[in-house]
Length: 396
Ligand SMILES: *[C@@H]1O[C@H](CO)[C@@H](O)[C@H](O)[C@H]1NC(C)=O
Ligand SMILES: *[C@@H]1O[C@H](CO)[C@@H](O)[C@H](O)[C@H]1NC(C)=O
Ligand SMILES: *[C@@H]1O[C@H](CO)[C@@H](O)[C@H](O)[C@H]1NC(C)=O
Image 1 (cartoon, rainbow, N blue to C red):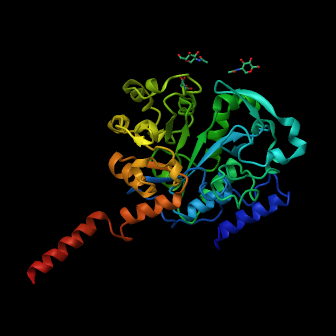
Image 2: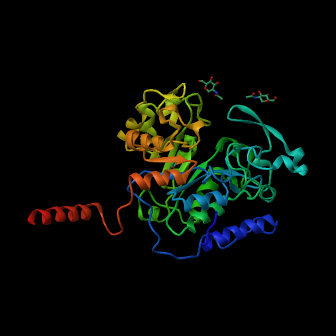
Image 3: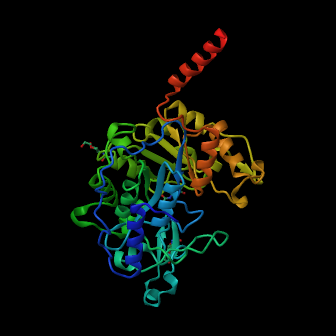
């Protein structure tokens, strides 16, 4: 939380102003960042990606500016977010379709009559839905910590942020920080929210990225300048936007019992060889729930599936979710040690990125076990130096 950098001060100024109720719908400072810094430290490319799931949400209320800035301070390669929509079509960073679990909406009497029941992914859900609130109304709410076993000290301090505000946090970072936004619940959002000129949720999503200069295929110069992975559980959305952008896409894979929300396909179908052959034309990787890669029985890890090797054989990256430090999320194999879990997934399963609630912990682990080479030293120049040292010792 404590930070002296000016970008942080700006965002905190914004948080303060929005707490004061002043600047709804108005960017808190020019977007995107006008700070030209050609010498920003690039995205690291030598080890798996540290993906800050909903920001550093193990510590701070999820999807808030504070959680994202904390994750950047802690070493995230990518900050991850879920994109939903307000009633007036503004894209926001928020995970659940309802506001109930992570905001103080229930305490706002004027919204008491705003509760609804809608069918979401085949289930009737009752609550206060983001799609029934304008951005101005959403900004009047305060975000709270989701879990009662995590620090609630920061609950009530921060507001919901827009997709554009999220992007500005990444672009303002003092090093290159990627973004990892999800096209969340697209079937539901397109049912409930209409945009002018027949635009769909997916169109607004891609337009927002393009407005802030996100373009280019994976590892292209443009991409490395502003890295982004677009993620979705809905294959139809990923395929639809493939005509609009060549930005890299990740196909998320849910638990084995949950069919896809758009195509109603089973886990077995979407992880089959033939489906991976099909989807690899559109995506650079998959993002599976980790317990589907290595099934869990009685809280012990069972025999791993071959999903990672079949994905890697097709040049698809694997970014599993979600890694959490708390004992209740750690399988017994890891003897209550989150570093043992990271070690297993990074060094045995060999995944290409991890979604973590505790970016700081993953970063520490990677710094200890796979640190960056000293500046200016490529791996080969380092080998040359070592060889030269050995040779000079022999001559002594
Ligand atoms: C949801 O509720 C409506 C209205 O009561 C009902 O017609 C519909 O079958 C329900 N859907 C599910 C999936 O339970
Ligand atoms: C992409 O564009 C091509 C050519 O215009 C079209 O045939 C195809 O249906 C489009 N695909 C999607 C998924 O919209
Ligand atoms: C989805 O597929 C399942 C299994 O094939 C089927 O029982 C169900 O009716 C389907 N749901 C929809 C909404 O099509």
